[in-house]
Length: 291
Image (cartoon, rainbow, N blue to C red; front, top):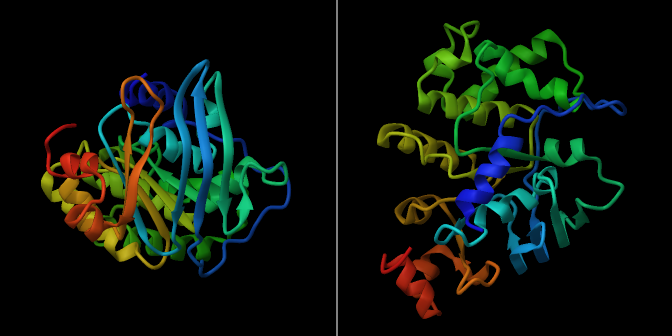
């Protein structure tokens, strides 16, 4: 099964998913957050009887940008979706191993789904703002879904802060009540980033966030990623090797060979992976000789 196939299955179920409101223990949005370390331990994933990942272990350090690279079909997007429990939303999906958020397993029964989604945000490949909602309401939509308790003044401040962090405030501050669907593609993607940031996640997952964007919009999203570094832990899937080299602190190269499940061939500091890879398959991939 390829990433494109599994991605289409997942996109249809998760890109537009609306979670039920939290029923207990509503939280108050805090003024600041601290980035968290994510650690995958021996993660394996299946769709039905088809295994797509095997024995994947990776530490994604707090406050850094980790890029997941590799050819289509190697399990990068599937792995990303295991990191905030999106994988379990797909019928017949199964998982083994652990995903630790500052040492706590997010698949432990003590973790509710809303806990995982609030602390570990997601930005998808295709911009998916709520088209009928205003720009303002798009940003604060996540607060209702996670049960956050906020007043009007706090919401106003949060909208400005989130849009500013996403690099969009100056472009939309005079039209906050206009539909989010009226924005350009690049602006819609930054609106989705702002919406994810509004609930103050400590980790932000990004699944090829620039693949549908023009070069100017891509540059602005990359600038946003740089600006977020240190404030939130970012894990990004990208097929663009130049982008991975530009935005990430460390890289993990995924590969699935001859029908075997995907796994990590090599990981390390981005400069090392691109400048002096230890595995010939990594060297061939980053040099563009396959994939």
